[in-house]
Image (tube, rainbow, N blue to C red; front, top):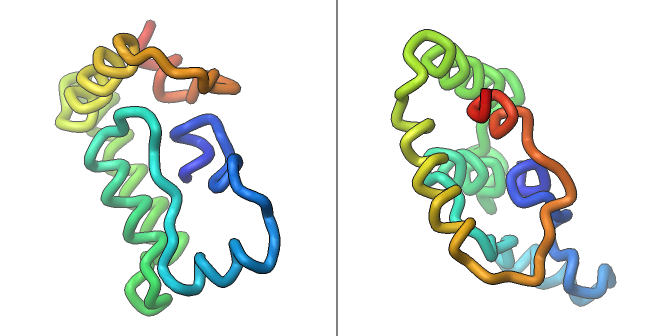
Amino acid sequence: MYETTSGLPPYHDVSNDENLAKKICQGLRPSFNIKVPQLIVHLIESCLDANPLNRPSAVEVKNILYQQWRELVNSKETELVKQIKEADEINNKLQTNTNLSYVTPLQKFLKK
């Protein structure tokens, strides 16, 4: 989910070695260098919970995303859409050296 949202793999700027694995076990989680809608951040964080029992199942993630999609298709002005628009405005103002490698399907849908 992090990669889909940011366009970059997690820890893309860190050596993928034993030290990274230890840091992840000690609680290191990827951080965003762009504004991300809070609903998405919450879902990503729940998927990365240190306790596997607290993580949503794949079915639960699918259901959450499907519910958001249904709301989007039915009204076009959901809380997620508001957060995406706000994030886009902020991200467009940011001057970063990070180029997103692709446009997400949701971004394509919203630009229609």
